[in-house]
Length: 264
Image 1 (tube, rainbow, N blue to C red):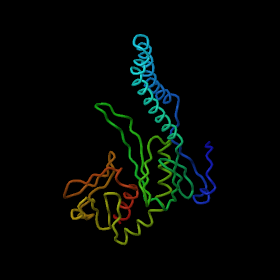
Image 2: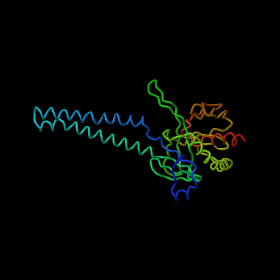
Image 3: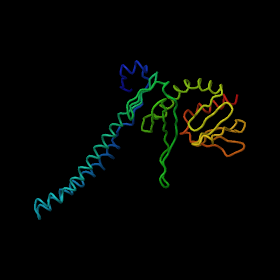
Image 4: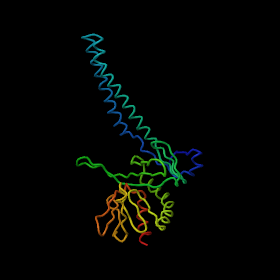
């Protein structure tokens, strides 16, 4: 059970605490992987410089000893500073968290911030893996929160139980967004989901040149689905539209509006 206690001001503005999702703590294995290379980087030039100083002092005097050893001591000092900064940064990351309240979020990530649900415009999720030569990392989930104002907030795999956090965020956010989106769609407005926009009469892909943003009538759309991390729009008279789901906020709402609102 979490020992997190929200400040009184937060409880007043965001309501009761539901759950805290913390950054992955620093474990023993990771600590060793941090300490061993750091210690090697610091001690190797330090002892080598000490050996050079003893040799120079024995055969050439103290001036040579200082001259021969100084670059290695400086290198050891730089390595120590880099190691200290890396360790401090990792410990700082381990103290980060996302606290979910009944009325919004308290985020302690790159900085501290509180967001009420009505201050959040959307969320994207994506499953990614990295490739190097023939080696691929294990796929992992990541997400991005889009506030109404300010920069997007990254949610990385380093947050414990991230899939559950994203599920809770969508469950809290989508019911608040859907009624307005449905009403705007019914009134003929364009609804924007990243680079994709829909209207009750058509769909369009937003490019950097507005003159090329030609709407496609729904009568020309044969199928819309998510496949292998992409939203695929099948068309009857032209090549399909294909966009990464990571570029489409609230993609579940987009699919729901297409299935319920547009088709009806």
